[in-house]
Every structure is written in structure tokens, then in C-alpha cells.
Length: 211
Image (cartoon, rainbow, N blue to C red; front, side, top):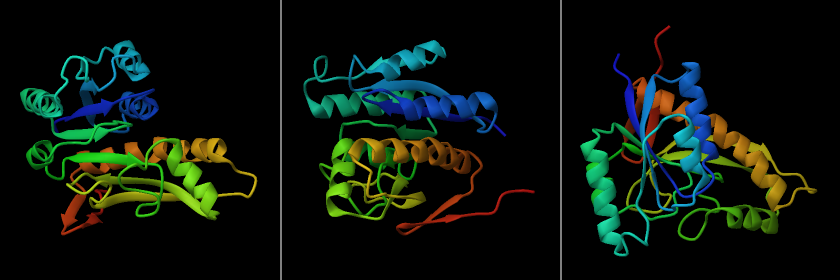
């Protein structure tokens, strides 16, 4: 089976990128990260990629002030590199409809809550956990989902939950959820690489793997 060609889009530290790199290097996922695209020239994730000899491209507001041009650059780069799967790993730019249509059910995102709770426009980073703590939820978690035209509204691939203790704050909850992200994002990429994901309307069916 040929290796899955993956592009990872980042804006910050890239810990989820690192989780993918680690699991690919262990042989857990039959994939290759062909490139990392960052919307931030100072993202530490770029250094992570360079340490593993992964090509990087910066598509930021300074070099491409027009959002449509930025997204066109992203789309052209993905197509040029014949990417099979796009992974959004802390990418803080809204993906254009053109990119979504060009890679329908081939773009996945990791979100730090149990969608549909604390999701949608404006819900990213610490705000997700601040809102969860303020609401007093007893359970939170992480979600990997396909990207469609609705923010955080695409078909859900994997969700995993953790308990929220009374003593938790947004920082401790964020660290708990981040551990889940590092676990389930590689799982979702592995499932995709094995052709075990079927999208039916807005639901995902996980097919059994070979013994």
C-alpha cells in the first residue's frame, strides 16, 4: 500500500504536528508528511518540521495580505504536491470554500472540546477551556472531524472524553485535553490511511480493519 501524502497546516507551537511525526516515525501510520504550511512565520511548529527534514511554507498576512490570495496559494500548494490528506493542527485561518471543495472529506481538524459543545466561530485556544470551566461541565474532551463550510460542523471521526474536576482551571483542563488530542489525531490519520472511514451524509462510519 502506498504511503499517504499528508500536509499539516499550523499557526503555533505544533504539538499535534509533533504527535503525528512521532507516530509516523514509529511506523504506526503508513504516511509521509510532505509539507507543513504555516500562517505564522514565528510558529515553533516550523522548527519542529525542519528538525525532521519536512519542507515548510509560510503563507501569512504579511506576504499575502489578501485572504483570497492566501487561500489560493494554499490550494495551489496542496494540489502541486498531490496531497491526499490535509490536517489542521492549530491552524488559525478559516479555510476557503474553494479549498474545502477541492479536498472534500480530505481535510481534518482537531478541536479541544466535545463538539458541538464550545465550538464554532470564535471558539479556539484557551477560550474553549475558559468557557467549559465557567459553565461547570463535568466532562470535556477532544474531537477530530472533517472540515466543511460550517465552522466545526463537519462529520465527526473520533471523540474522546475526560472528567473535569472542580479543582481544574483553564490551564489544567487544556493540558488534559491536549493529551487526548495527541492520541486521537494520529488515530484518525491512521484510519484514513487504511481506508477505513466512510462518510454518510454528516456521519462517519468506521469500518473494521484487517486481522
